[in-house]
Length: 482
Image (cartoon, rainbow, N blue to C red; front, side):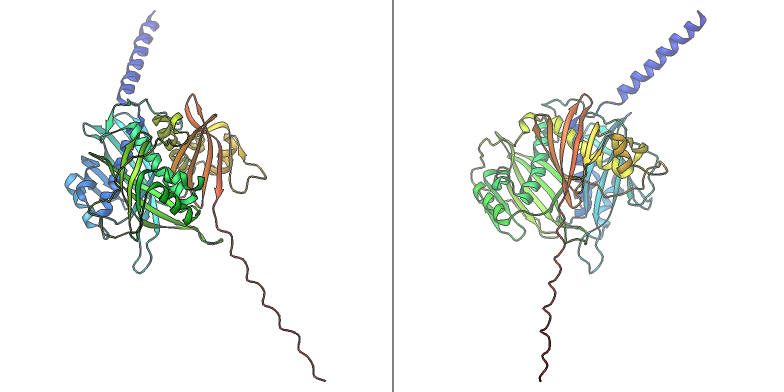
């Protein structure tokens, strides 16, 4: 009797503690995920342009930033002053390309990690990505929305810290209210807009469907102005332009999509990175391609580009974005998107981000990496199509996320993925993303625990080696005079 008297209160106390912890750890929704992406975009735009107010606005009033050398900047005043001290700044300066955001709920808020490629040019050298790393963040939800309480920048090569472990069980987002907004946009708005940018890169580089995919991203009177000032107006002309250009290798990488609601739709800015894939065996390299200044409108078929103006790095920011005359479009739905909900599309973005962090870190003996696959998943790379891929989670961990000492890898930047978008399919979804000198075309299934990779396929986009020069024609044999 005495034992039961002791155990019952103990069980009640433990249950109460678990309930309190669950209350302190509200689930992350897809709308939260998109809002945190907007924090990262505003961080980069503020830092690179020298806009201290924009930069500091993503932090709490007592927010902390710790740089790669361990130097700490604390509080609104110090953070506001920081961007003006950078060597390169201006409205179209592009230095920090932030991708692959992962978020986990924790008591009191959330932890987040993202990968950043940094353009840090040397005097007299062309601007290229020369360094990178990861941001490790502590986030809190405030009355004004999510804010960064503490951000630590870990440069590549830094030993992997033991703090802030990501959950090795792939989290699912809680359902977001379709009417709830963050920064004036619903979860459906964000899902449509981020997908629009992912599709743009693929449609511009690969020109599928005789240019129709590219044209369908614009209103019927949509406009694209390139960095030389040449304007192409109208869907049919945009289709012709992209077909005349021809298919490219993986080239267009988009990041830091910053959205602001306007009376007529959305004003957006996005960083363009250009990936250069030279002939083998040379390695690819990335360089800033410019800043897109965009006007987006919501049509019966979803969000579309009304106008896109590309400004070269360090060029003058436009006073206004020219647009067409009508701003309408026929109801051309994105392929398959009618069967993928906004929550589905956010979770698929998150899946790719966790894949990148899992393979780079090998955290928890590869369990973080394993969490994005089905138990019988298969992964094929460019050379596997004849000999077969790697099948099953144990084999995947051994091949891609194994370290002999069982410890996480140092901080790295090498498996970041760009331009994710997905189409519904009878079995679930087909998703695409750029990686390295190629791209993924993946088969995804929706399990009781969320979306997972069933078949992952990476296709190389390397240029073929230059042909060997033809041997010189040997001179005719000398004739002997007799």
